[in-house]
Image (tube, rainbow, N blue to C red; front, top):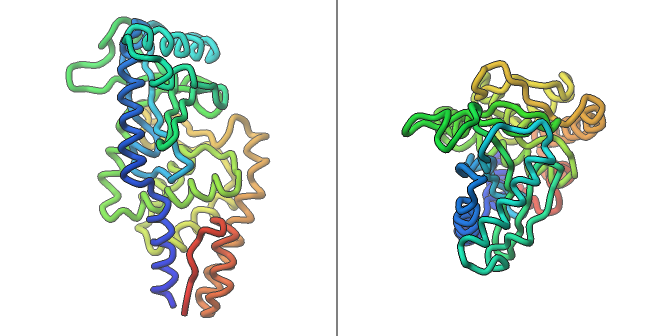
Length: 306
């Protein structure tokens, strides 16, 4: 039975991965929208980030996140940055001579007060996040040739935070030699969406990275259980960003402590359910294992057989 449980968990994780067709169509949408944006003098560059860039995207849930680095100094108001990004979309599409509707530009909509979303059938969609070069100034400022500049991005509390694009992918490539860490992150993101939990995906990724650096993967079932049990014991406290430019930046689970407390029950329930699955696993009770895992991840979790 242990091999069956492990295989079911791996199979579920593989099923969560976006198909190559969706990935290709999403990249094409990104190319079209990127070309439009870069025609606007308001836009300096675009950088891919998030779960698609990190190889942890969940099919039907994750969008391709793009940092749109805007010209000039960052404003205090995130709303003003979104207005600038929205204007750049319209402005850029008009400059290309291509039909704006074909690019999905006018179908953009705000989401979470920190980004614009472009959804297109057959794609994962795009999430455009306004950002600014850390040094301000003209194109290319803050970065030498071949380097990636530090940029300011909105965090979970909608405050500007320094971010080094590509640093997460680099760390993942160095420590995730067998794909177990990315599989763990994908399971945590899938749980978040299935349960409607509002914890930041970046925070969950940070939790998984911390665990991987402290202990090698033993089993995906044990890995997710240990993550939830630690979160249940420690609380959803801000964590050091392991890949921040300063080394002191904190990652927030949600916008405020009060809102983090609202999610604590979901974490504690996940911890107890995962522990129940492990206990059933040890007892050879495949039906109980399946019930627990479907309670965590939804009815799409595959059957566990003797």
